[in-house]
Image (cartoon, rainbow, N blue to C red):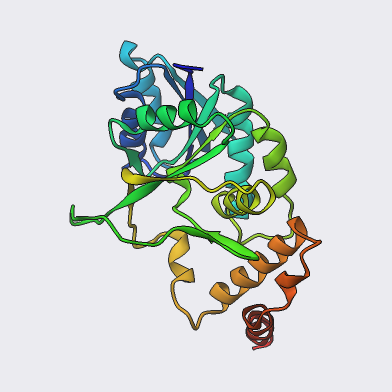
Length: 269
């Protein structure tokens, strides 16, 4: 697998101002053996018009489009279902995830392939994000990404995650159920690989631009005294306990009990 095909899976919903940049960044790489699977989740804006126009260009013939017509009401489930459908259509041995409002640096895929070529027994890889603000300002944050005993890892966002395709479809199905509407694909996969497979690989370089949007779905989790923040935290504990049932230590922490209590109080009031 010295020079494998890499499939970039892009999920899109109403990101007409950004989605074209995401696609271009994935196909205009230093590494040529790439394809893009663009999954549009029934957008009501001009996203598909822009992508269909781009697809007509010879330069972007490796762009495949999936048009979903039945969008669900829970955004996290929509994301996971989109990735599952895109994964089935992809042909690459390596998979890179990319949200349609983010984009890659030109050398990202080359760096990802180099890692997997040198680490034959590893199946997941993270790179570091570059925060991009509406003003055009960029910032490389010094977050300590890491695994933590008996708990979910601290990991970069979805667009910073790459995998070997082998067995990824079955793993996604293992971590996808309807019990955790506030848990997105990045948390589920990062936690599963870290806890069940003991894999957490981080490139010490910033390869992905992570756009900071004011109307981002994730903004509601940023406040400590917020019911949604505690609800997601409670679901995170339940998810970890589900995939790691034999480890009773998951239930024996102050963090776990205080999260359960506060999330229940928010649900009452």
